[in-house]
Amino acid sequence: MTKKNPYLLDTVSNALAVLDCVAENGHSTLTQISEDLGINKTVVFRILYTLEAGGYVTKTETSAYTLGHRVMLHGQQALKHNALHQRVKGVLRDLTTRFNESSHMGLLDDNANVLIVSKIDAAATIQMSSQIGKTMPAYCSAMGKCLLAHMNPLQLKEYMNSAPFPKKTLTTLTTAKELERELGQIRERGYAIDNEESEEGLFCVAVPVANSRGKVYAAVSLSGPSSRMINKTSQIIRQLPLAAQEILRLEAEIPQ
Image (cartoon, rainbow, N blue to C red):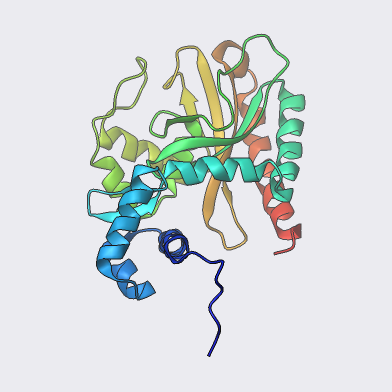
């Protein structure tokens, strides 16, 4: 019989197990978590309630639990010391140096907003007002539309149910029909454009970033004033997929 470690707290161990279960499954109900872990349902409920209050999990409309924004934020701190993240910054820096526009890498958070995980600012005086850790709506941003275009169909359907979306500018797509048409075009051509849809005067081009299994998990972009970007768009569209491929190559080099 294994001797119990007297320094381990059962409550904390159970909470970590619940958090791991939610992370591994993506979406888990109270009953599923209780059955998977063999922990009393009442105990699991109290753990989930506490984690939700702290922002570590989020309860969806279907009563399933997903990872919360606090996990994302802590993840960003870890990324600062992550080998792949440091190498990605090199890819973004090359893009910014080449085009003199701000480059970004982002992913979707638990609320289907784009979370900026890496950024290199341009030297130009006029640039996008963004920062690492900041979120933005997916439906009106180039990175967001890239990620929505490759989202799980069931999750995308749930996202579309929240339409109509708030209008940010005159060119913002606000209906599910408009956005669905746009996402179809993005899948076909391989890149997304934000033509002053999130902010007047801002133009952005983004492409998806896939892992070694072909699953899209992030997007990279270049953003700047429409007046500057209009003459660079065709070159950026050719260059961004190469940057995404370089990130995939770098990922493969990192020891697992």
